[in-house]
Length: 261
Image (cartoon, rainbow, N blue to C red; front, side):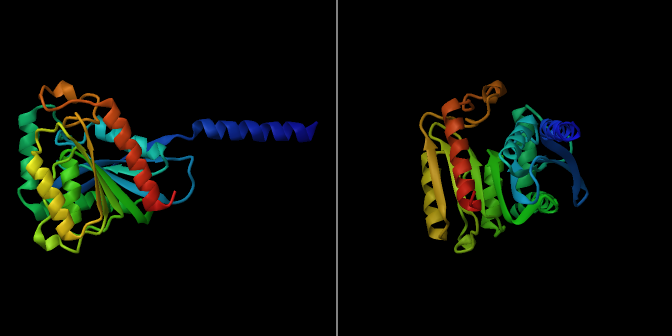
């Protein structure tokens, strides 16, 4: 009877291990020239070894639960995700005026803007769980624009995905220097980004020689991936379940292409 009992114990142990394996998270504190920052790392402890890393950059509201939830979803897909902090520890708001003020403080100086985002990327690369040769990033609204600025500045990423992001045009100095592949997910009814801005954005990417794709979702407004978008009291914000699902699926295929499965 000893052998069956031993086998049963091994099976129960394996089951117990499977149940306990889940997405883990850890706060990571770091600093940008005296500004304390706190990001959050997410990973699935059921996966052994190094795996691709994904940087997550929040909306202009700050590093709130929505950005962290997206990072958790990426960890559930098998990646290590790091939701960085662009404003400073505990700088989160639901007020448009405050969000605008914090965002403008960051975006006023493009070099410092890229530096702040780059520090978050360094935290992701520093994780022993991450394959440093396979890193991409996603960003929402302000975060999408931040990723584009990183790309224009020569940041070495395999790919970036912008969800309803601002669309800053690639400057002339970025021509021939944009390293990541770009996937832009845009809402056709987003009145924050005029059609002529979209056209100029596309033309400048072509002039820069970027590898890019832009998906435009009919009727989708700004913030179309965020189920709580309408709660902010801004007419141009609205959740679109279809655009959310389709854009997330396209992102997964994009990452499969980048990382080879």
